[in-house]
Length: 404
Image 1 (cartoon, rainbow, N blue to C red):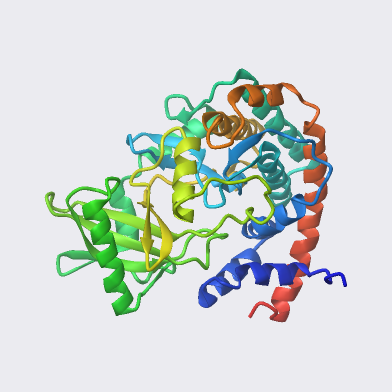
Image 2 (cartoon, rainbow, N blue to C red; image 1 turned 120 degrees about the vertical axis):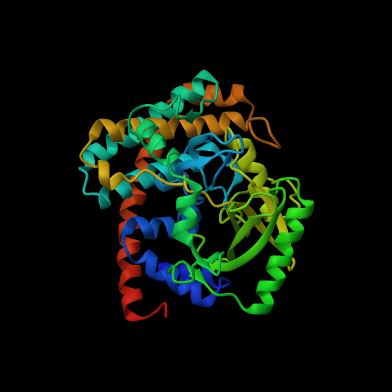
């Protein structure tokens, strides 16, 4: 007997069933805000559907971030202290055909531009531009990177602005001073108090990380911690923020993020054999280090209570381009999309030949052969319509209370 087709809402509930109950309710509320937020929170739906299509020609294997959309590009400070613009979310990273990444990002352009009420013709041209620039970069076979000195247009302005933000500003937003000592601000809607016993265990764990992990900061001690809410797709995972204080320099503090890692949402649908990672967090860190030009400060992984976690510094410079502010500025959007395409191809070139990925020569040939582009555009256009239908059904079920 054939299994009955599951509804969109059933698929969403099933995927999120193992997340923290209280937090997943927040995720469902965030996904109801608009169609793009829904698209961001349902990566698993996209790839479950995409894995069944026969319309996309074969493409070389590549390391992909696994959830590429317009808001998964942004600024961050590398461990060399320079501010970069690059792909910045690798939780779903996996070895897969290169086209899997392209279908996701091109669909995201069409969905996001629909939300912004940008004409369909312009959205299509931007999707075409992305594929054209991606192919041109692959064809050259040389990865590119973007920091303040190499950025152009709106990305240059954006990086200059975020680079001026100081750590002090982040601390002022996220902390409060009591009796001459800082603590993390609990009035922040993204911060939640932790059970005292768990808090002691977490702070002991981070203390051990500081002492024994070579990626940790030197001469710091833990003085506070909270449960932290961030993102859309990752809401419902266990996530904590820690306030560290220098034991050598008076008034010097760091905020550190520790996020639970779980298997890539693509793993049930990718038939390609994957490396044997020590943990899911090790996978994320390894792929991020090979795909980004320079990894962010303090990036590492750890095991707490038999669960894998990603650890990295919280930064005042981490941000994404706000397309709402530039929706009327066609030239600026053009430059941003061009940059994003260049960075996507560069990340695949940079990680080529690693643990099963195609070598650069194969990616170059793929970039020179443009016949697959129309299939990606066609699929993305059809799937963007499906996202609209799925979102309408989700919103209807959400308002009925099906996700309570």
